[in-house]
Length: 622
Ligand SMILES: Cc1cc2nc3c(=O)[nH]c(=O)nc-3n(C[C@H](O)[C@H](O)[C@H](O)COP(=O)(O)OP(=O)(O)OC[C@H]3O[C@@H](n4cnc5c(N)ncnc54)[C@H](O)[C@@H]3O)c2cc1C
Image 1 (spheres, rainbow, N blue to C red):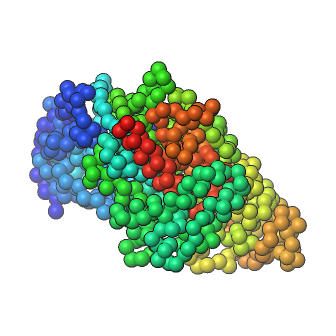
Image 2 (cartoon, protein in one colour):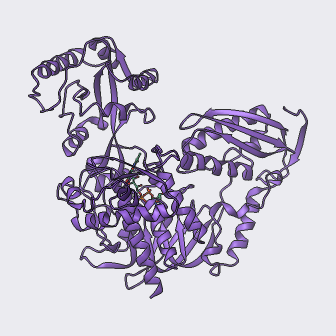
Image 3 (cartoon, rainbow, N blue to C red):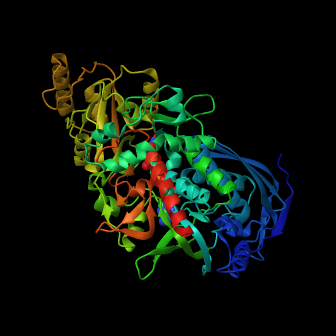
């Protein structure tokens, strides 16, 4: 396969080409209509890989021509890279992988383009898909070694521009964030006839929505009707689940249009199947279809892609790697646009109708967790997008917004390594009374069947939100398989006695034995005198598994306060002209401490996102 011809090439400076492309771009500052805005990576598209110019102008470099195969681990398995080296440059890359289609899969494509363009493996990480990018880079490094590539070139840092270009744009509506809420806002505004610019901070679109199950809670959808489910009003049920501490008007608003919003997606080709989700008592959860009438796991990206494809088809422009960094506010307090920054350019964008904040939660900001969700402080993000750092809060505050934060995060049980699935598996045993939750001292601290605030408060009290779950070996074979793999990975402990387990953990065997003996005694009597677990079952002697769990969060509650028009409110209840917010970044009144029901967040994002887009477009038309 491998040609032994060694060739020498002169590589020119790619960054210079990129800078030239950008200066061409900026020469028309203020005149470029949104429809002509290039996405962040497009500036040097015309530079063919073979002629790639790098910072090492004039340098003689060598790499052996040939076709090479490299492999490395990604997020969901092995990434195999097949690369062609010709004429001293990497000219073609093919990637085989099992990464999630809309996240790692898209990320790998972005990374591939970056490598082909820059002719170095040291490209910027694809934010939103960093683990997949790291695997890709490792496989490529393997290839570079095989090809005896000169590291000074093929491992060179991609140079940052010394000075960013400036560009002015004017559109009707700017949307910050491309998750469910941002996509819905952008598409709706476009459908109303507005000129729309969708700005995304990360390298790939979709945010946390991408990683979600994609379940949308709805009644009155075509699927509900087909199934003969005549449920109309579920707001009351939902309100009760929210301990009557949530905003009833918002629930009513979201639930009443939920079926219509699912229909909107289905009319664009989104396919779903019905199921129960979270605590729903009927099949109200609309889950992405895998194409065979079954549920597609982690199918949230289908929701994003359905809307973004339509948006692009209708002429909407999406710019990735371009976060909104500031709001432009006039002397009357009206939001008239944004400042957004890509790697190379600072954009000053006027938005005639307004700006929609749809920047997701603040899972990745320790300070904001401390400030707005103290019960979630110390939890680790469990699936939330890296770009979700609470920007809507900072931006809205700059315009004088009222921030509401009920204090909690969306809870989840997670494996300590964040990769194995044992956390979710074991969590399912709680309600059956077959799992004992223990603190580091091997003592129980909670009724294992409670799911809401009691458990959250108890978990928050454990150092680092880490605790232990003990189960016996009499379990479903699939679960045992997952647990055994985690044992091998050193994150779950398996033993033939409690003393054995305690020794492996380096913890107090006496406490553990006493706790389990007491548990079994209470289970025989059918009464948990300590915490009131109604389903308490004895653990069988023999093999035990001790799982280290941490309380993760799959999202946050809190952000700028909004009304039913998705307008951001000031502390005095008046709305800030030109500023809208939707989705997780504005869910402070929609949720209280519990995640009311599966699919509720996407349902809410669709409702408030579409509303924001519609109203911002109407304002532009005034
Ligand atoms: C594992 C997991 C499974 C889940 N499953 C479900 C489910 O099945 N159903 C359900 O309803 N909910 C689910 N959720 C919750 C749900 O996914 C989120 O609450 C929801 O997707 C949030 O959507 P959003 O549009 O508000 O934010 P996101 O989807 O997070 O999008 C926000 C976007 O804004 C971008 N951004 C941030 N700052 C800026 C800035 N300054 N400028 C520009 N862009 C910016 C971010 O990079 C991101 O792309 C799940 C969550 C997780 C973690």
